[in-house]
Image (cartoon, rainbow, N blue to C red):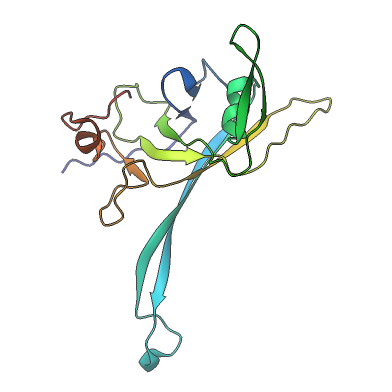
Length: 195
């Protein structure tokens, strides 16, 4: 196997959603006020036996805590929709969107695919990309109106992907150029669709 260690430097493109709903923090469509972060924490349950007291003899994976944070330097309806997932658009008389309002109590936040791509690499090189299958904001919205540059912090939390299978791997994320679930989800040859 070739040694492909790379120094990590610079921002990443953070692409949230797909198609018309996509919000791409790529230095062109939307700008970031600060660098984004990805935090992946495995959740374990310890296996304890009386022979070793409180010292676990093993740990078993029980879940994943995956968090994505990006700070938007601009604001529009799409940013609001991503930052505060439990909203519903307000439509005007011609059918276009004119604003947003709180979603009904009991509704589920809209999850979106998130792709994180190091900006120093061309888009065709995806070996260092992280893809989170489904993430949504479950936190609040804060917007400062002081006499300084404003920003909106978007915090997303991952949920299991659509079509998940708890007895198999690949329910929350993957790193690299090939989606391990692409063939199962779309019948293609393993390449990630729409990336």
